[in-house]
Length: 346
Ligand SMILES: Cc1ncc(COP(=O)(O)O)c(C=O)c1O
Image (tube, rainbow, N blue to C red; front, side, top):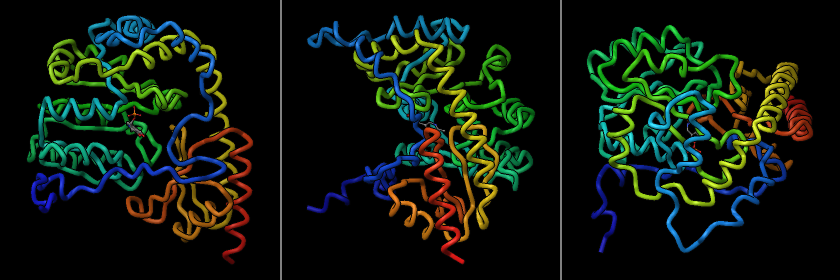
């Protein structure tokens, strides 16, 4: 029996998301934080393993709502924001529109669910090309638009006035994916939530030290939350993640300190990269830096030989690698290795 013949054509045509474990000494490929919350894990000690977790994650919901200054009814949790992308596309359907290059899961999930995709290239500065985007909005009438700001993998925020233009022109839902907002100098869209009924803001704890928990959330009008909640799988947030995240959220000082260190290290990384011949870093508002190099495949392989894992993006952004900001020691080791590799290519 040929199993592939049974598979939906949209799924057969997909390539699985590339999340392989590659052995390395310094892991700078997945935009995780180098700082965790080991202490918060103690919070799981009293959990009853025989019972299902709280389906509404009440404790965590209240903590988060207070922290964000929103109502508990404005929040929906996902097993990572990846799951929320699934839920949003399941709820609203396509066409699904997004600029490219961007986070690959919008396209992968859209295709898996059999929805039409409308991809719009970013402009030369990696900002939204409003003319082309508006054209796509008018012609394709997307039900859902995903805007990652700061954008993965380019690192920049889209101009607020351009995001607002898209929000105003769209008859569908506009999801501003703020996975990297904590590292940005921009305020993000939260202050505008009340002004736009079609705005969904998506955030995650993955980039600020809790990637292992798989915990994302969206903030939106309760009307939207209510519809998306219909497709949410029951008990999608396990009890251990709820407990650890609640304990970690009480340690705001630690969160803030690690974010400050990452932002300052990002500055040092950018300066160091700009000084290496044949390397061109792009400005970043996130916890990673996109850099153009002469021969990305060779540089990627040479770094890995030194035990340093970065992301090779040559397929999606010609000539580019993406490096996550690590600890000061890791960043120094990365810069030193890259300098040596660049020198050896002469
Ligand atoms: C822009 C963006 N959104 C969402 C995610 C997924 O986050 P989560 O770990 O919450 O699923 C990522 C992960 O890299 C991302 O870059």
